[in-house]
Length: 393
Image (cartoon, rainbow, N blue to C red; front, side):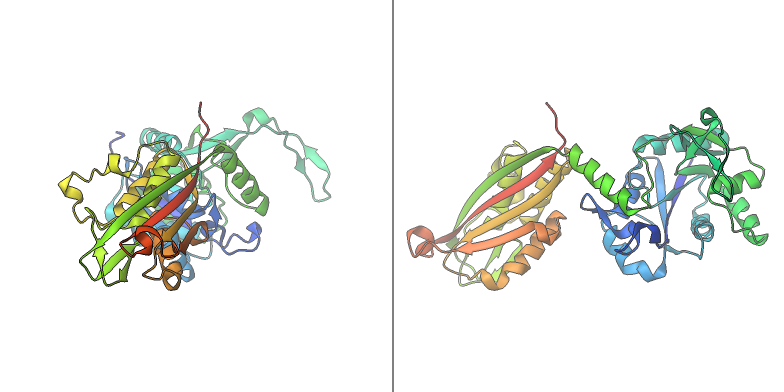
């Protein structure tokens, strides 16, 4: 089979994850500040050889799902069943109208699947029709009896740990799942076992030890520590901006339209808060300043909304494999009063940047009627940004 054939994905996310402890279904918890399910889905949604991602969720989780995967392309969620096996079948049936050639079936509780594993899965299914990623067993395995005594020590050289995504010709695995459901078989622990039961030969390909399944609270603790260690380059940048008042009836401050007796004299919308914040982020990246990326001499930025500048700076952090740890803005003005709008501004910055609001601070002060801000001739803003990047020499 050719690698160019159409590939779809079933993302299984309907489980309750009770062994992971308190905090709700594990696929909607965050790890490294990002929902588990977002990490799992993103790898497939952005893979160039995948044309459709079909999530399968518990209908009670609809609101959590929508919030957790905002910004990612996917099919309308299918409702999960009482077992993982039933949920996979629901996902396959939902995909049937698209008639994919290859389907990858992945557990949302494996958030660290790489593009390399996905590519190998597609290639293996194209070549063999049924394949699973595996990693070698490194520990000695013991078989115990009912009493807990050791009964056997299998040769670990022949043992493998199965992972997902498991990959199949779509028509073959759909038929196998339908047969199992018709025969009342609901005891299979993975899709490869159903394929084996249906008489298919299941090949293996190289998995990834990082592609682990989150099962217990200890798994979350370990992976949080691993992610933090990978982002050991902690940087802080500062920014400053000022705009004079002119004609108008409002000003834009931290992404919020604020009624005022004057407007800003500016090439863009003049949002001093967001401009200072963009400079702070770019400074932390050692990546120039806002003027070098968005020159005021360029007519295409005339009247531009500053939220796109902030999104751009955040994307520059993400492109380096980094994360934003904290954003802080201080507004310096006599009027308008910032205090009543502080949380609205925090929420808007959080929305634009994709950072939790607990990591966003907006403050305000006056200049005690001194200087241009004291004379109400304009507004100034200072900002700081703390980011974490992978360490590199």
